[in-house]
Image (cartoon, rainbow, N blue to C red; front, side):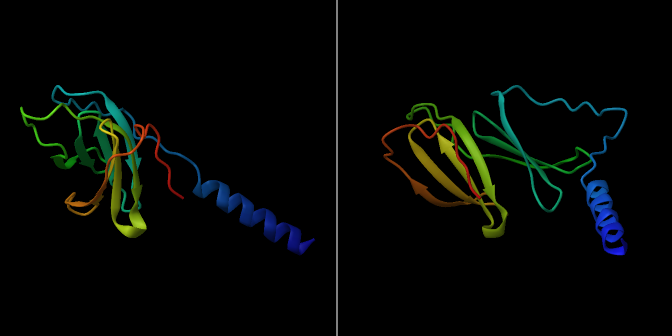
Length: 132
């Protein structure tokens, strides 16, 4: 009986850790005009990463204070427009992986968003990326 009670207490404690809380009232944060938001990622250091289809990445605190913003695609008139199809993070390797509409997969250093590696010439556009 004692062991069952201990497991029950552990299960209750685990359930409380997974509870979601919301800060009310909601905070409204306006963004400059740009492409649609593709994805929002939550990082282990409590940073939120938001990426738009046009390749602009925003880093936010949990209090929705903008930490930094960076454009991963150069605005160049000579090249075709580029867009993001999906993004995932690999925090244990400090990498952000971006799939593009140009049949590329690009890896960036998560800490400074400097390019790390690019895989190009894929047979098709990578519409969905996953990592586990």
